[in-house]
Length: 502
Image (tube, rainbow, N blue to C red; front, side):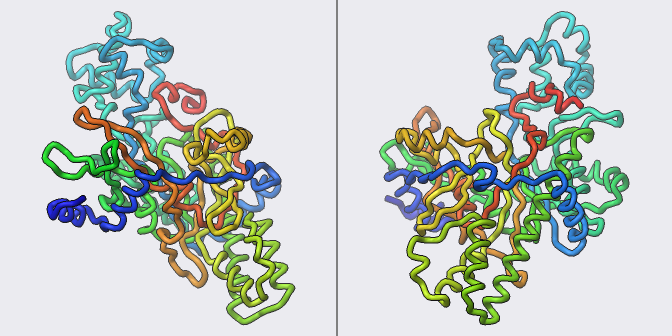
């Protein structure tokens, strides 16, 4: 199937031939569906924290933060193209949907308005004249194209989102503020952004420009690092008959493999507590307090559960072999880590049970914030059957469910919550061991999509999603968080919502 030239290209890409063959096999057979057993709900898989408990947990986190390694990990490579889909159609063809009138009427409410005004003035165009004359296609052109702000070609992280008296802020700056408030260990704030290669220099320049002011304001020192999606995480594309798709020059076509590819970036990081949150899920300062509170709540719970795991592993390592220890472990595993063991587990000897628990507990831990389902797309919280015979909590995307199976579809539709990419993870285990995250993903999860290139149809493949398949074998706890902590910007008009205008 592959020529010597192909093999050289594959080697240069940093992918093993075995991995390529596995990807092609997935194109041929598809990915198996995940079997969900029931939706996780409050009291049955989702933990609800009272106000009194949350206050105590915040205090616990603040007390422990100085003694642990903290990191804020922000996927920031996403382009803003989809955010401006309607505006592009309006600019190019004059097509107006219901979003365009609101956009036009409230043009002055966007945080980027002053920059837009300046960009147009630099070309001798007065924005107020354009507004009064209804020349909104011209205005859209200055927003989207290189003649003005070039927002149609930038990542979301570099767009002006929120207005303040001292000037507008981008999401990158909002994450710097967040980091100072909950990822602050002894005055040092570590942040890591995953970015696209073509925009990295702009991210670096922005942070260098604003860093001094934020460091002075919050009395912190920022340690900011960047990484790019690795070529070795790209997946091969195939024709509709599953043979390798070739570019016009005969070379193989590799494509970025979705956010699951960022598992390799996360694996390069280290930390006792790692906060993961998308770049566009930010709010102005006036609404940030709840986010600060619940990030600390999740962090405190993570450290609490992790310490319980360490205590159990210490006792097992010391040779304790009692029925009471087995009973304690079983209760913790089932009621705190929300995992049901295999059916034949109770047939094992005490020694075998302890070895099983030692293996299952010594894994990465993640706490996933869950908000009430209000119709937004996102992975839902479910109890699911795992390949090893256990039952555990999984973040499940609709593409992982067999929607032709009426019973499975009905179960999926009962989800009361969803995960808005709000995770707090520990990448370190017992005695400070750094986990190798690739060992805890389910390579039999993923997505196949149909695309086209040069007028030819092709099939593309995404790796296991970062918060579902890539973390499917982690110890997982779901915690309910307030809806105000989830305010993504999917379209430009989302910036006009009260949560972004506060």
